[in-house]
Image (cartoon, rainbow, N blue to C red; front, top):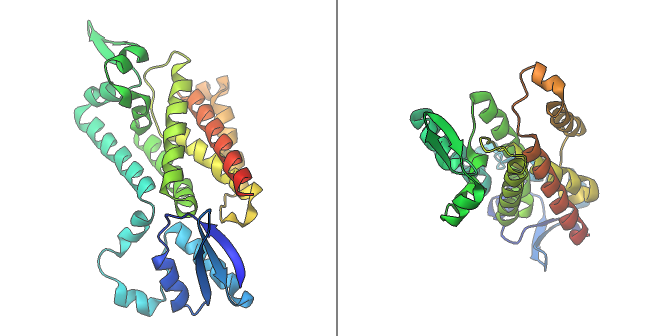
Length: 280
């Protein structure tokens, strides 16, 4: 038996197990202290197994066409969403808040900014985070990550959330994904608020945290199943640095929550370093 990969203890492997048998790939799944271990019987099937694992991670159909058609049903398109519930729920909340903002406008924004915002003489007057927390508005520590201020802002953030988030959740479980979301969301929001900014929002701080986590796991644990193209890492880091410069303002990219990006990235790298070291 050849050890292939360690998967989270709470990962649902039923679909993967059925697909492996359907593809006639001999295997075994055992419980160990850190999670579930997938073993391969025949080393000549390693490539086929790796391909199925990659498809499972991406949320793609695993069963051979004939069986997939028989199992089909109208809800098959929901399978990738069910496999990564934390990522899917986060994406859904962002879409819901965006729709509510479009319908209700400033009422939604004022309810979700990191500090309460009042209106005096028709002008927004921000309060302090301390006042909001003292009055029980603890959701404001996290809620700005669900705010998006345009279609492009929303689409790009959701693309990166789906690309990185489903890797983390499929390979390390929903609890790890939720931890990353909460710590990077709150950490990025506080970093941005420390600069004196109140009206900001977006999932990009969490996206940078997921980028840092996935990249470190792929580098320090090459067999973990994590993958991110090197050019994508370079592009996202270059974009973060670019938006911090005065040149970005000339091109209309000046109003960016740079500190939230940086704060999220630091959280993601720290968690990636800790868990990759612990796994070793």
